[in-house]
Length: 238
Image (cartoon, rainbow, N blue to C red; front, side, top):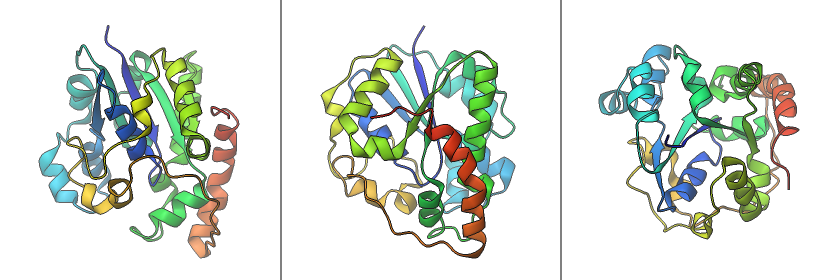
């Protein structure tokens, strides 16, 4: 049976960089958020390029799971996904794939996300959904890989080696760098969200940010923090 990796990220993470890293492997095919149109349709969320996404991707999430995520392939399949996209999806397929829950400090997410979409909600941020996904998988007797963006950026090679070991695949040094610009697998929304990754050739070093959140964004950060603290303890460590 072919191996399928589902990366369940929060928004405004370095998940696209991780997708680019896996795209450098000759044995891997990557897919950029195949459940995005499904999420936009069922949630009604008003994101940049909403109409274009709905017109470009299949809107039927369960069909996408069957025909895209679980497709048969001789290659390793890497799907970059957002946890909050699972609304209205039959999640039984999660037991047939390798799951990575990719977290980030909620202060950093909110600060970055609010530059594009003001006053995000806890559902937009995704960390509570990641917590719920972890508990769901754990209740099935499965232990998902938890990855914290902070540690990945502090030492990309070490963390990538540990990810590959947990996935039972070989580490490929090519995962550490890529050519500047986009890749053919980028979603049609890339021009709205991917400016930084398109200007990069590898993982940017982690930098502690001086973040000041106010009003609803500050309250949201406080609400998200316990979920993040629960998950980061379980993440791959340096």
